[in-house]
Structures are given as structure tokens and as C-alpha cells.
Amino acid sequence: MVDMAAMGTTMKDMHQTDRNPTMTEPKISAKNVNVFYGETHAIKDVTVDIADKTVTAFIGPSGCGKSTFLRCLNRMNDTIDIARVQGTILLDGQDIYDPRIDPVQLRAQVGMVFQKPNPFPKSIYDNVAYGPRIHGMAANKAELDDIVESSLRRAALWNEVKDRLDAPGTGLSGGQQQRLCIARAIATSPEVLLMDEPCSALDPIATAQVEELIDELRANYSVVIVTHSMQQAARVSQKTAFFHLGQLVEFGDTGEIFTNPRDPRTESYITGRIG
Ligand SMILES: Nc1ncnc2c1ncn2[C@@H]1O[C@H](COP(=O)(O)OP(=O)(O)OP(=O)(O)O)[C@@H](O)[C@H]1O
Ligand SMILES: [Mg+2]
Image 1 (cartoon, rainbow, N blue to C red):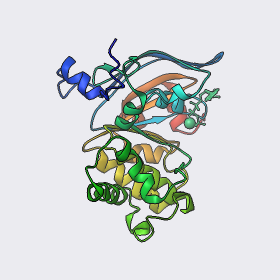
Image 2: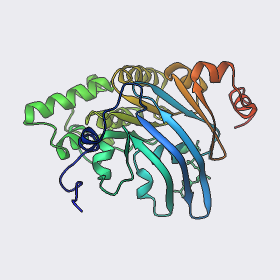
Image 3: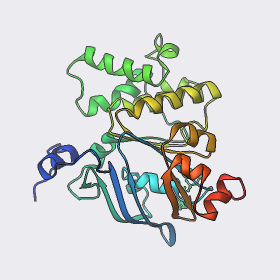
């Protein structure tokens, strides 16, 4: 078998030879996904399509599996020894669990921002330049400088750090670190951005900036955001998925889910009766 990962084959390359998608095809299509941590059945037969150029919110009570399911979408669960993922997840029609797929390449296409800011122990500049460097995205220093600046600008951090790009990323405030992690995630121009409670460490001003960024990203990317804030889900998303005890209970237009939920569990959650 040809090792396509070693040849630097991306899902995009494979998919261009394999398929010719139309605009209406989902960006990500998950079918019958189950996740186990040892004996714990954390995700139960979840089937959902995630649209391109759309913000999708994952909501639901603590422990219902939002982070677990999000991590399936860029194979971050691979890094958890006891996690087992079953089912099919297609990105542009291509199975992301295909053994030919290089998870490192995949994660440049499907970027992720975590709840707890996790800058690398490197300078601010090198944090943002990390992905573009390993994926050979800049031909020279000037191009790399441009990517770093534009990523920091879009993450609403540039003005606060432009005079100290060589300072360590870990020396920033919590909210600044989170915006640095967002800049790092968008620096590789991912097609999908997964955000797990990205604003929980941010003040209202930084939260508003990140929400604005999410809205801007929607023009080109598919964004999935986990949030405990109904207001945030209502503000930023067009689609909402409600999870409960490992199941996807309800999925639909955000406006519909919030004003006219079909399942009593969804209604209880959004009206604050469970969670
Ligand atoms: N690394 C892990 N090892 C073992 N069990 C885990 C692990 N991560 C999550 N779980 C379990 O899987 C289930 C789903 O957890 P998950 O973190 O996906 O929930 P969540 O909806 O993101 O919750 P929260 O809103 O609190 O972040 C829980 O029962 C949790 O205890
Ligand atoms: Mg979580």
C-alpha cells in the first residue's frame, strides 16, 4: 500500500480525485458514531451532518458528550488511550479514519480551540507561526510575518501584542492566551474550526470580539462551537445540536430549537430545568 500520509497527501488531494461535491453536500457527515472510554459508553449512535459556511452550536448538560463528539471530528480522541471511536465520519465525503489519513494534516484542516488556553512554551510569534511552518505554508520570512499578523488581527489580539511578539505566549493573561490559541488555530486556514467553550476564560469584551470573529469565519469555514451559554448559541450559531446522556436528542435551526423545541428534554434544558 502506498503511504499517502508520508507523501504529504491531504484529504483535499484525495477528495479531488475521488469526488466532485456540490455546494449542498455537508462539510462533515457523521454516521452512527459511538465512543467508549473503557466501559463508559460516552457517545451513543450519533448521526449528524455539519454544513459548510455555517456555525453549529453543541449544547447540553455537563458530561453529555459534547467535547467527546467534538474531538471525534478531528481525531483528537486518538490521543486518549482508552477512547474507542466507532462509526463513520466523512469530511468532504472522505473518511477521516481511513488509515491513509495523516491526523496531523487532518488537524490543520480541522483546527481546534480548547476550553483552557494552551499556548506552547514559545514566543507569541512562534505560537502562531508553528502550524504554517510545519505545513510549509510560507515561502519566506515576509510571508510568515504576514500570516502571523493577519491571524493575530483576526483573533483581535494584534494591538495588544504587536510590540512584544518575542515574549512568551504563556506570559499573556488568560483571555489573551485564548485569543493567541485562536490565532494559532486559524493560521493554517483550516476549513473547519472546532471550538470547545472558547469563551469561558474571557471577559465580556474579549467574548464579543471572539463572537465577531466566529461570525466572520463563517463566510469561509464551517465552525462548531460548544457552549454552555444559550445566549451565545443564539447569537453566533445557525444550527444547534442538543446532546443529553451521550445521545443527540435534537438538531435543527437555532431559532427553531430555541423557540420551538420538539423534544421535552431540549425544552427542559433551554428553559433551565435540567443541566
Ligand atoms: N478522557 C476520558 N476518560 C474517561 N472518561 C471520559 C474522558 N473524557 C470524558 N469522559 C466521560 O465521557 C462522558 C462525556 O464527557 P464529555 O467531556 O464529552 O462531556 P461534555 O458534554 O463535554 O461535558 P462538559 O460540559 O462538562 O465539558 C462523561 O461521562 C465523562 O466522564
Ligand atoms: Mg466539555
